[in-house]
Amino acid sequence: MKIFDYILGEPSRNRHITAYHQNCRLFKITNPMRIFLRWLEVNRKRRKLSINVRHKGIVLILTATLGIVLMNTCAKLVSLSHNPLEMLFYRGLVALFLLIPYMLFSHSPALFKTRRITTHLYRGIVGNLGVGFTFWAYSRLPMADATALLFTAPLFVTALSPLLLKE
Image 1 (cartoon, rainbow, N blue to C red):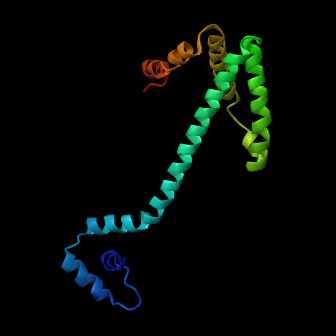
Image 2 (spheres, helix red, strand yellow):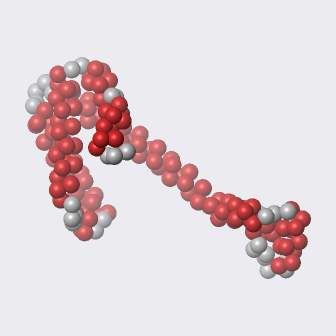
Image 3 (cartoon, rainbow, N blue to C red):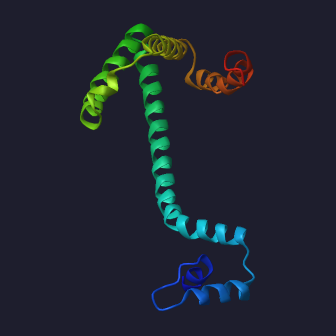
């Protein structure tokens, strides 16, 4: 990376600043190139970090997908003996007992304070309605048909986003 020392204007202890200027003239490096090369050198370490973050993101999304598949499979299996409202209640209860200790130990109690209680209630009600209807669909339809219908959600998001989100 000695060439970067010359190009980026960071002469080491053994070189004079004139060597930097001579090499800039030699390589005909302009200011935008210096800026780009400085960005490249600074972000070299960040790129290595971002690869690890990407791998972590991939693992997290695959784990979430596995969790959703397991939840839907359990909902289909339990739908013969339980009402969709009961399944929704037990899902919420399990999530509560799993998430509350995690949130208390990893975040401060100030995390639970909010100024938008109505927005959180609205989101909770709409989310629970969606999951409840999904469980109800699994109890009435074959799993493949219900899952195929769930894959139409992006079409509804695309159609409703101009109206609801002003996008």
